[in-house]
Amino acid sequence: MSVPMSEEQVFTLAFYLWELDGSPAGRSEEYWEKARAQLGNVSWDVVE
Image 1 (tube, helix red, strand yellow):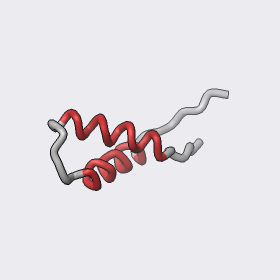
Image 2 (cartoon, rainbow, N blue to C red):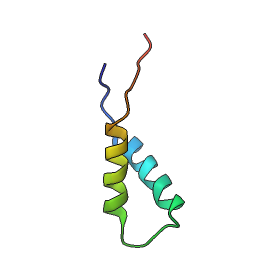
Image 3 (cartoon, helix red, strand yellow):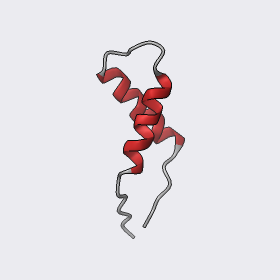
Image 4 (cartoon, rainbow, N blue to C red):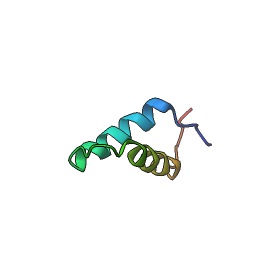
């Protein structure tokens, strides 16, 4: 089952990745796209 990613999930992962790389200035769009790509490759298993 495909579960859409939320903007909050993208933001949280982008911020985490940005901090891991030392918080480089002026690269927010790069980290936003990295987060979207990583979350897009995740298989979400929903337990009912």
